[in-house]
Image 1 (cartoon, rainbow, N blue to C red):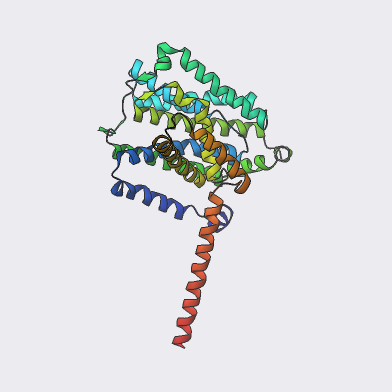
Image 2 (cartoon, rainbow, N blue to C red):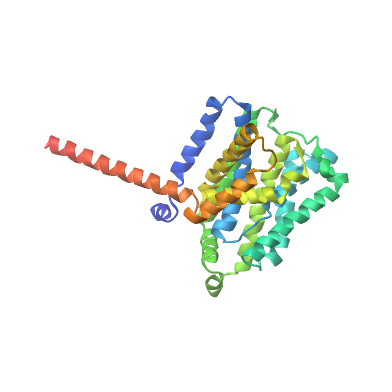
Length: 345
């Protein structure tokens, strides 16, 4: 059964070991607090990307509103811990539960839409959320933002140190990664693929397509909420611009660049876009004196190029390269073995 799974879905042990080893080694070689912060943010955004991969790449449902769910988690944790002195861990769970419920209720009507109509509907969710956090200033702080969000503490150890928080973030990301991989390899994953290929054909098999679409939409929203809560407790400050539609576009680009049909592509796309984002800001500010969200223009160009030349994202390209490398290595090993055998004879 494991051989069949590997043939259908690819091996998950090798890439998992590679990523875990990389995550463990990086703190030993990275000394810059700036780079370290980027690595933490990559881990947080990867959690959102995992959910979007399930929603877009497997269920075939587009979303331009995940920044809203990211924000619900951030503001729920922020408000509950600052105004009501609730434990941050309880606040994170409440945020995930509330986000799942809200996304489930919203998903029932909007997931009846398809294509660009669905994209516009999810965009509307993001705009509504943005207006609400500006208007509910007695709770959210309005345009000024919400300050004084406490940092997390695990087993009595405050996660103030960047190294501790880095390991916590990536441990959380690995839990969501494994959960996502298990969903993909399960009966649910097969149903989601079927929905992606043809909703009508899936319905003729007696599958309640609407139920699966709404459930995966709500689950991806809960992932985004978890990431938002972790982000809030890391930065200890949240403000409305962080959760505007440009953030939703950023999440979408991360998934598209890495490859929406691959869970591993979520990490790849997030890493590439985050470092590219920082590079654009640095070059634009240092050499051209440009400030503001110039990277949005570059993101537009990236989407065009990806859709034109690698519509399935970069992960399939990397997979093909590694498969060819493994194949050449196996051929070389076989030839070497044959030479040794001949010499022995």
